[in-house]
Image (cartoon, rainbow, N blue to C red; front, side):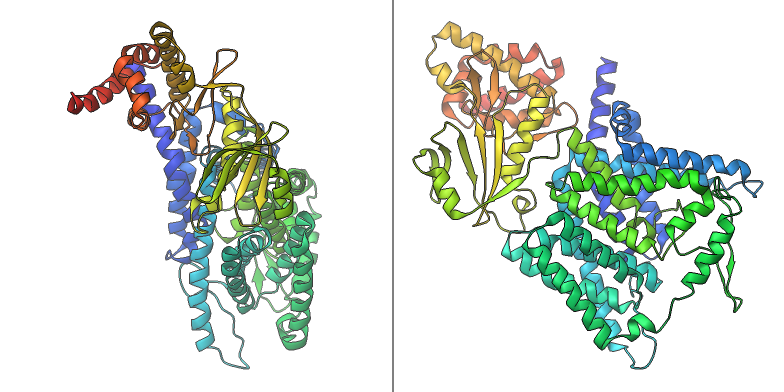
Length: 620
């Protein structure tokens, strides 16, 4: 009994951390630099709400570590970190800073946390990113207004970011450019006019913020991101994007050439030359992870980084450490190109392309605490790794969404039999070839259905249920319609609804079937399946005698067996249907409870009994 209570408590802790704490931690990691007072607050947010919870989650369920270690990016990062830590053996410092051992762990937890979040709560990922982008947009808008008021012609004017922990125009430009790429991605991929009309001004504001910093590094990075996004998207908007980039570059050269030429090369060539000389001293093994790098310019000004991520890696960990590092970049782009049917891979790889472009002339530290440089490499790489893990576990779709024109949709539906309809038209149709077509009407642009269309939820739920051994319709294709609605075609499951089957049986056979249904319902709950629309019309009794589920768009799969409150809520929904209530909870409830108890725990069954009997008392 004590062991079962510990397992139940462990499951509740796991669910709370992965479903609620990690999303908050990711949101604060992406946005808090715009409103916290200093970077130490960001560190505390990340350590307390993302890194430490991820470590605890991996300890609670070691099998999650196995899934993480199947990801090539995670393995490459471990190899890179192991070599960096090994380099401390030839460190010039006699007593290495213990913080150096924590940094790889915290960075690795970013990979692990993204993998867990995108597997168990992937529907929140787009809203989290959107919320962080809106916070950045509002902060930059206020900063631009303040910058414009204080602008003095003829003076060197560079916007830093007047709020939050941003205190350097170049470092601020990294984050501004990061969210500039996000709004660019939304403009390139959205199919809803309301979202497009909101995203275009947002993109203009973030671009203005980048230009106001006076930094040229993000301009190079944005160029690379635009070229990559156009290459992987390959649609009409790609041509417009390239044309816009050319026009924008020409405008800068014609009207603001000083932005590109005023500061010359900013000593980049001198810094790179001196860095290469230092690298040549220990080309293979590097100078060690905690080695100090001092580069003194001709005027005596001293800098501590080579202003190039690649040169920094070569300096600290040599060619041996450079190999896993460059592999991560290459694999991230390759994987994203291969999986470009999933829009989130386009976003993540475009952010990585931006980071690679920025890293050509900026940075140098290889493993740092959370700060602006994380937005250039570690965050994009962790997102790609998380998407890859989630896709391997069937929680992110690999199936492309096809755009279906009105004429093609009408042709598809010609001579179809309408199975279900509402005031707006048909919802479920049986096509001539036997396939089923289910249409999901467009929701308001700011609802969850805009971020995660119900057709994609339907398809994703079907994939995940099949991995759990629960029969569901086979998804054939996903469609996007011109009116912003979506649709899915699928092969129907053979059989009768459980409601139809019970109507045709006598009392003794009905009792046996209801007992088996109680077992099936308990199996769903034990596997973490919370089917909001669970009723006898959405459960099929198939030809082989097994149960299957249909109409599964509003289904959620939790990381652990359902807590007792969710089990009770699931039954309350079923009790709203008079015929279901009569069969399941009045006439044959003992058989339902007997079947449920054969799979679920005694405590869970007792809660189910309590809920049913409580609702039955007023009627009595």
